[in-house]
Image (cartoon, rainbow, N blue to C red; front, top):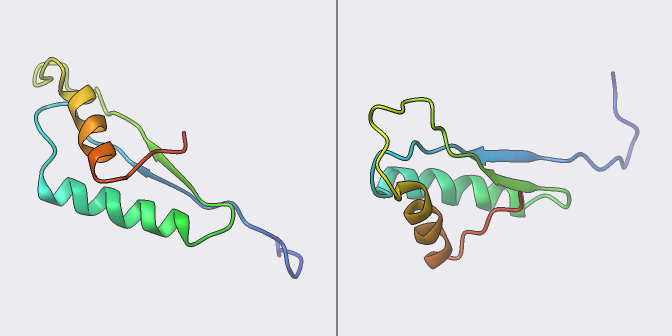
Amino acid sequence: GRLARGAVVMRRVRYAPSPTGELHLGGLRTALFNWLFARQHPQGRFLVRIEDTDRTREVAGAAERLLEALERFGIRPDE
């Protein structure tokens, strides 16, 4: 359907890294662009969802280090 004029639309974007190692430049760029996109919208939300579907390649502690690295760059998830 159509939105009413002046309706506020929630924009939810996500960054879904695999916990298979350290944050790399391409992942940081993706997270930053998504975070900036969310910040441009009044109801924008930035989500981080760790993709743990490949258990054989998962590196212990990688998920925590990914979140810490994003935090160092000022990229904080809303959810």
